[in-house]
Amino acid sequence: MTCHTSQLDRLSRRQVLQAGALPALGLSLPRLFAEQAARGKDAREKSCIFIFQYGGLSQLDSWDPKPNGPSETRGPYRPIATSVPGFQVGELMPQLARQADRYAVVRSMSHGVPVHDVANRMLLAGQSQPAMDAPAFGSIVTKLRPSSASVPAHVWLQKFGGGAMPPEPTYTTGGWLGMAHAPLVIGTSHEDNPGTNGFRVKAFDAAEGVTVDRLAARRRLLDQFEPSASINRPADLLSANSLSRFRERAFDLLAGSAARQAFDVDREPDSVRDRYGRNPLGQNLLLARRLIEAGVRLVNVVAWCGLAPGDKFNSLETWDMHGNGGIDIFGNGWNGLGWALPICDTAVSALLDDLQQRGLLDQTLVVLVGEFGRTPRISRGASAIGRDHWPNCYSAMLAGAGVRGGAVYGSSDAQAAYVKDRPVSPEDFGATLFHTLGIPPETGISPDGFSVRASAGRPIELS
Image 1: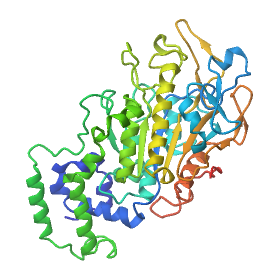
Image 2: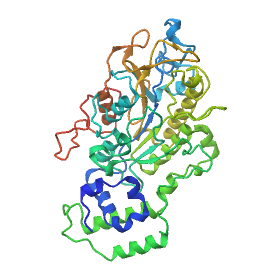
Image 3: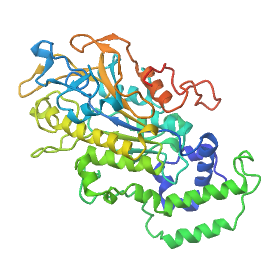
Image 4: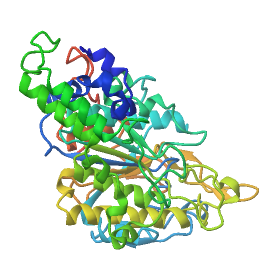
């Protein structure tokens, strides 16, 4: 019945959740919970919702408008005032503009790689040159601050898709930390999201033929066996009482209702669902709030905004606005700012409102960022206009968890092309997120406890 750490690390999150795996995992899943609890603290730790604007949002048309720039760079949108004097954002974000006192904007994000898949790996790992098996931010957080609730510690909503996505092991596994730190991935296709009628999370479905009664029978059988003192774990980790407690938690996850209910957005009033927006991003952010409230430590959300009326599905890369498929970057198709940015404005502002009203914002870090920005110069192709990849200078938004609202960190030049002061590297951005969550960036994550740290960067001051 012994299951060593290396065996646990090879198990996928779905395997752990599948009720049909209980014969092999009757004791290993409780051990996993015990190991997590020994490393972590309690359910009151800070949590995070990390929203990826996959493809790269144009900084000039959102967080860093340049109204006095030349016509070939500034675009058609005018800046609008926010609730913070002297701070302006693009006119397609009026609801977020009214909430500027709740978030900070970094206008000096910068690196040197204009390639989607590599830049996304950099963002996920918080490194300028990440190894292919480098653990992502979420996996590190859930290793150092695991959840003690009967829900998965780490959930990923809406897989990356399209030719620009990073290799799946980058984010669907725990990297070299092992599968015990991989996220539970929900949304494996563009139609698999809570904005689609009939959506249902299937991760907690029992294997065929495994009923609740059979799970209960297995539970009673396991209860007849007391853990042996010879189990290959420290005595203070796997005492009889702790193993029993973690076994209870394992069965609660597999057969109980807490996790299922957390993933059921249909329980939300229509007015709340409408406030977020009946689209993939809005409903995924509503689901993210439900998961945080249930005790999930970290939720990643790919900010796919869905299809505009008349669109046909092309890609999940909403923010990669070259003028793809004949859709202008300033147009109202799925790949245009006129469609995507208002949806994002509605959904993210609803999330901040909801977290604040529920008393969760002080303990929940909300991150909104892409892997890079867009070129200042507007490109004019044969069928549509767009902006191309631009990693030299772009923007990010952070809110909650003690982030000082209304703050603007760093600045760009007159065309938002290059950083003017206080550049923020992938390492520094990652270190800032860890610091904001109460995790010292220098915390060791390697088996020896010191040779590999959570982050090699330096946190910027946002609190």
